[in-house]
Image 1 (cartoon, one colour):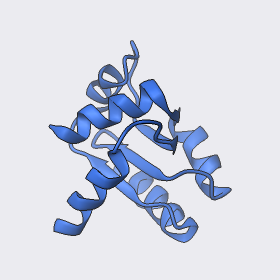
Image 2 (spheres, rainbow, N blue to C red):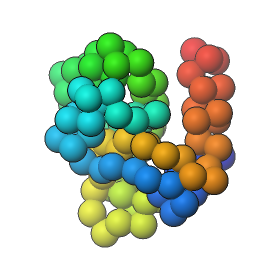
Image 3 (tube, rainbow, N blue to C red):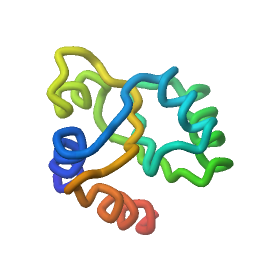
Image 4 (cartoon, helix red, strand yellow):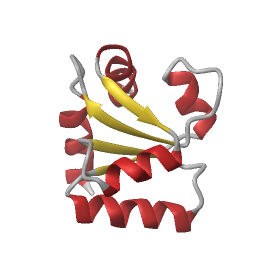
Length: 104
């Protein structure tokens, strides 16, 4: 999938924050360009993050795979349930995820 490649490129060339609490703190401050949420996060937490992100003007993207897959995609030996892209670097993840959100 194209989005997966671009997420990895953002991790390698840009600046990202991983983890539910860290992402929540930064989204509350209005920091970030894209919030990526894996399907392993329970619905209450997903809704809370989406709501906060919407109020902050930060788009959110549902990663259709588990947090273990997202962690592996990021090159981490642990699960990543939520990640926030601060700077995409050379990645085109913002454009690709925008297209997929517009299709809905």
